[in-house]
Image (cartoon, rainbow, N blue to C red; front, side, top):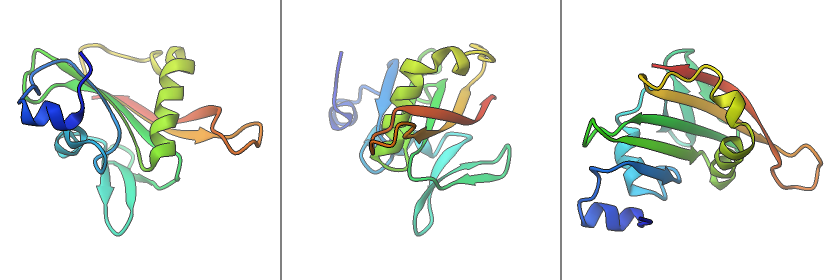
Length: 140
């Protein structure tokens, strides 16, 4: 089932497996989930991704966060989150999932929450993202 974030919230459908796309500004489910994440998007005069594991702030415009976590509203379900600091970071998350999934899943442990911070790249210089680098990944 495909639903808008606003429909999920108004119809109280959070207790499902969810693929949430978009950051906390554009996606209400992501905004609620973001507060519960280990690695998360933070607003402090500007958006950045913060990792308490490495104590790093990722401020690149094309930075994004991919997370597969237990659904906090139903622990039997999961949520996969693709959220960027900007639209380009969210796009980079999709590129990572579709083109770099083998590298993302190398150390994946399905019994733990998974986080990856990525950065989108324009390798051919045409102004469009076409590749990603994995900046950090962890099973927590």
